[in-house]
Length: 126
Image (cartoon, rainbow, N blue to C red; front, side, top):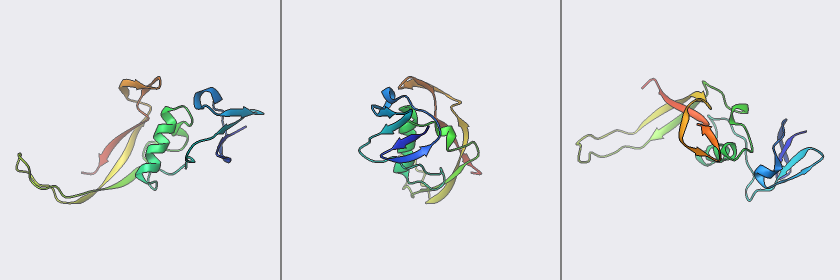
């Protein structure tokens, strides 16, 4: 039994085909998407791939905790910002974000019935 997205096996587990509008065949779930879901590591995926995985989590297609874990890190580049009304400018910099929680923090507004944030991030060593 496994999860398939556009013909590619994601791994073990079962997803209710009613949740994703896919079809089930012999206990296998086939999800036909406009764009295939690419499973990526938190550190290496593009912003779009990370967003797609989070969306798939909130849509009940995957469980993000099966792929990412507390302690995973991701480098992010922040562009320089000129001073505005507060008079404070910021130089360009690279920061590291770390996952400190998976389905731990409550959401103010549920997403597709989920009441917990998929991941909670914190800036590492600022």
